[in-house]
Length: 78
Image (tube, one colour):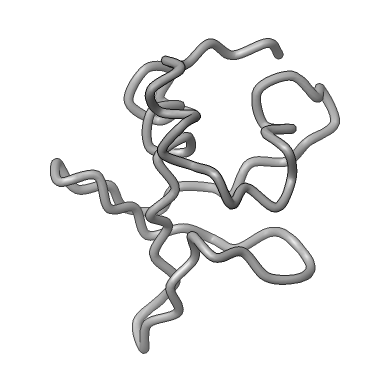
C-alpha cells in the first residue's frame, strides 16, 4: 500500500491508535468513506474493533475527523 502523506498531517494526528498502519500495512482496513464534505469531515462505515479518538458517533452515523484519513481520501480517493 505505502500511501504518502505530509509530515504536517502526521504531526496533527498524535493520538493515532494504530501507529499509522493505514500508510504502510497491506492488511490494514480503512474505514469506508460513505459521504465526504469539502470541510474535511467524512461519514464513515466504522470497520474496526475498539475505539478511536478521531471517530465521532452521531445519531445518523459516524464522522471521522482524523487528519491522516482525510488526506488519504483527498489524495487517493480511498
